[in-house]
Image (cartoon, rainbow, N blue to C red; front, side, top):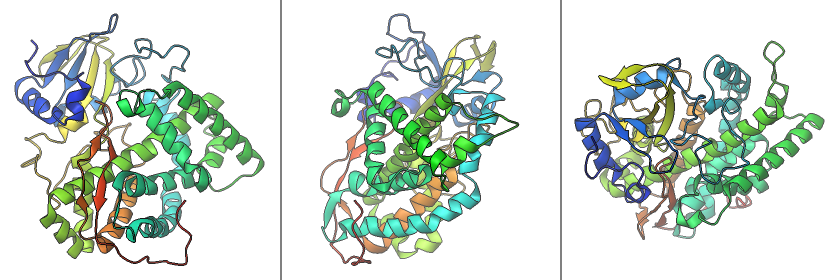
Length: 419
């Protein structure tokens, strides 16, 4: 039975942040909920809204496949306007199941070892100083464009081996691929953005074959497991994944976190007064609060059941992370932002299992670096207008967030601005 007032395909309701109320009803009344899809020829789907059920689905890759139908509500062949595009199933790590997923993981892990992350930390610490230096004298900025976007972009550019002066191309391609249902990006061509990124990636790979460096492109084109290497298309798909996942998620988490601190000035002040003592827990709460990837989809590979609801082989099963991270049975007062929350069993990086986020440690590091720099130097940031929310039920995005604050001095006046 449909529940009046619940429409998980109404993107305007997600943009107005009304989805939390819808999921609260689903967790209580229909934790495994069926939605018919209005698109002709498109199958409906089950929605899983509770924390424990999401974890069970996410970890059971034999029963719930990422590859069979993809990770979006619509399968690639159901999507409108995708004719001629590359079907990512079996080619992009997100769209694979073990053992193929395990092979991908072994290959790409070479770019995310503790040594690689450790090497980049000092560099990013310096870049965080320069990012705040760039705006500190102004007294106002667009928090998303000037602050939240910058450290993830610079980090992913450094990891990929993209020259810093070209990093904004990654930002542009990512926005165009993710924001197709948002009026701000409605005239953009997501397929063209994918093609441009593929061409750029191929050229970058060519350069690294001629001039190897200590970056992930060099690692990936040379990575080998039992004689197995990534094909050119697999390499291109991974570069697309890295571009989107590497900047969209951390950028939006940073923006949601700052918005929450501004809305809770007593916690903003408490965190600024004891950064060393409170930042670790605050970071986990920011991750829970943001949960920037709202959902992933799986396909049932056999008849099964979730929370007593029968699921047929071939059914679409959509797991809603944004709902699980507000589950009242797991989190006390889940709609309150609380930097002291502990334990904090959020699933912002996924519900465990093979698909746990590859960049989790990198994301945590970036969040702590940029928030430490902001908290030490800007203790009084305020909104000058309501944040602009991305129109999407897939990515919880903040497009713009104008803020004001007391202007301060640059830490490194001799350094060139981040450009």
